[in-house]
Image (cartoon, rainbow, N blue to C red; front, side):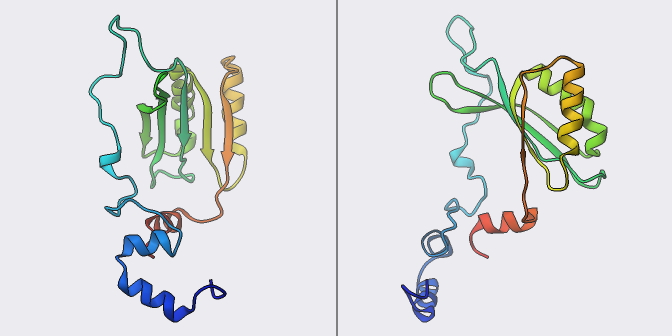
Length: 171
């Protein structure tokens, strides 16, 4: 940015704009206007899953999931949202979740049960230390003869608090 705009000019822009606009335009950190990580007005709420008049589901027979494991203790929460996709408009529906204040190792069976129950075909796991979790889950899936679940490991080098602050766009 120094080649295009001086620090003084940038600081003037920061002072003259609201934090949302400044973060989005000049810091390239877009956030919801309300400052929330998930703007509730952009989420669809439902009481029943969509279906045709004959009762047939309008969601895929398969699911997608993301696992945010905790680190060898039960001081933090493990979370695993599970989604299905609408077959006509491609929106996603949260259909179930595993949310527990237990160590990841204590949840192995529950994770595998959810994969089987919801026919999870893509399973993204946040793992920052090793591929041990992937190996353990693949072994357990193989023992149950579950071959349809692709595990995708995502490694993050920035700690969670910093990632959240960066998404907020005003730090």
